[in-house]
Image (cartoon, rainbow, N blue to C red; front, side, top):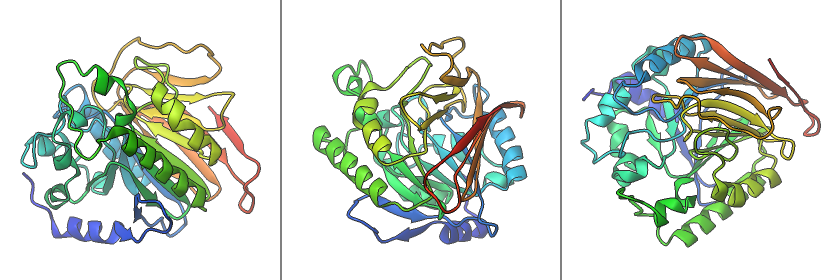
Length: 336
């Protein structure tokens, strides 16, 4: 397994600073600085950990190329980080074989902020959350739920797997590691309260929520009804701009008439599902790609631009939105 360089250790110390809680929320809070020109750029990838298989390595190559071009500040993982059954312990070689070895480009030697997916819960969850992994590769930061303060934007990472009833009532042959989650009702209730509180007190210009499971999806899994019922009302009440997820092995963008939130899926990090798409309103499905790829985001205080890329580096879809500098009212968006 690769040994950390002094440079990477310094990078982690400088870029990830734990802050005291600024509100009653129990969510851990981290800070990441923006560029000197007050801009921010990052990549989003999900459902990737297959030791390079199913085009994971090809996606990683293009991420490295685009990451260098955009001078990305960090990378977000939307979960299902290690297939099929998470990590089996702190010494599981899958951590090196699916993460450290694959995302080796210089531009990807930045902080990774990750949430857990349902496949991760099939392994040793505490190992994947352990700070020991940060000593093995300091880019790695994975928690159940947390806040990332990037000055112009607050990110709210939410652990969505415990919302899914089927993981508890119909696990089949799978064994899920629910340590730290049970009793489930209390866990979800407290999490929802913490997310609501954190969103309400946030004064960031932009609010982005990241979870593994879908809220709106035209793909194989469709909408995650428990997340729609319990989490979506909180996001709508607190002026969230983007909800970013994985779970669906595709890339997609949905914009519905009943919500100003943009629903963005970046779950094309490796194995994809071909031809499995259905959405009742074609006008709301702005983009759907049933292949591998990733998403890039560029932000300023007044502008957000996203782009989806395939394994050849082709731009598949772009979309942008803006806000006035000194007003929270009014918004212009475009897709092309």
